[in-house]
Length: 427
Ligand code: CMC
Image (tube, rainbow, N blue to C red):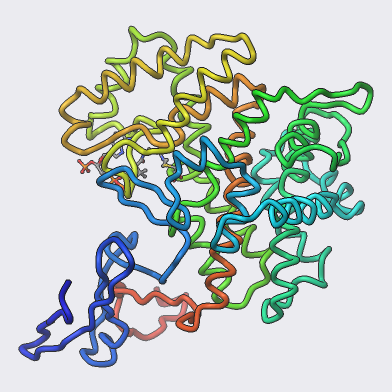
């Protein structure tokens, strides 16, 4: 650890304090850099910039480590539940038994949505992408729950956080039901968070629905794997939107919009579509060659990560979960074999080895979700449902951070310098 970083600008030396976290790289505090030097720093994509301090999640991308409040993701995925992880992320510690049951009770009492919201759904085309619906409906929650939009009131912040976590499964299931033309199902609070979601998605009012415990467990684990991932693009979007004082529902809608992109949450949909396009293992070399070709925009979806330069620990759990779901449902999707072979071939290819490209969380999730019965268009919705916990926890942390300011990056201007307006007839 160093005490200060020295920077020389135009022959003048400046010292910048170095801050240390509990683990991970130190950061150079450049907050006074512009005031002292008159220059900005340049870092598109924030590859070297820490945008905040956070106690929630730690990633060591070189070692393939992911910790939530210090607990390894593998242990949480194996031994915990999504509700427990949600409590952990929100409150900093694992709950005692009574705290957990109180939290589950509170969340289950917020699962219904305002009845008027169903009418809102009907304004969408039937073939609307469920992410488009989710984005619109979650943003619209701010018009329905006025009593929890004062971000300066900690009680309102807590209620908004619980509402968002509780209502996401209901809204996600409604988006699905709307797309297949089936009636919406009200929540059944006697079920678990995840069981309730499965019933609202796959049940119908005409028949009783029995939750398959193995599928419920697998789905809950998938939610845990997606719960938080420190300052990724959508979380940073939520923080940036929230930094202006926007209400939490609007901030979550911004996060959902960002998550939708194929380089982020949309990759699970893209990964399964890619596996379907590849089809059989004999065609894999052709696609690997395309991924390596600089003149071809094609990339192996579900491969590579900004932070992980090693196996994504979430992908390890996900690969194991595929087999569990297949066994429980007595299915065997040949695309899983294609995925395993693709991983094997890519990981022995110099291009992927040199660039440290490994399977990420999205590589296997599509195969599982498809086996459970979700259409590909729902994959990113499930990601958003789970990530809501992380977004909400990060948003709360940001609001209470004394260093928090409105996010306002600077730029290197490369456009024209000042010039005079020329009337249209003289151009
Ligand atoms: N297939 C082929 N080449 C790749 C891939 C890939 N999937 N990913 C990165 N590369 C190459 C890239 O072409 C570049 O090569 P070069 O240095 O010769 O120009 C090099 O690896 C570095 O890539 P980058 O785009 O500069 O890295 P990044 O950190 O900006 O991008 C990424 C990370 C996740 C956007 C990228 O790896 C990617 O597009 N992967 C496919 C999409 C995907 O699976 N996304 C899900 C991410 S995990 C879930 C989530 O957190 O949302």
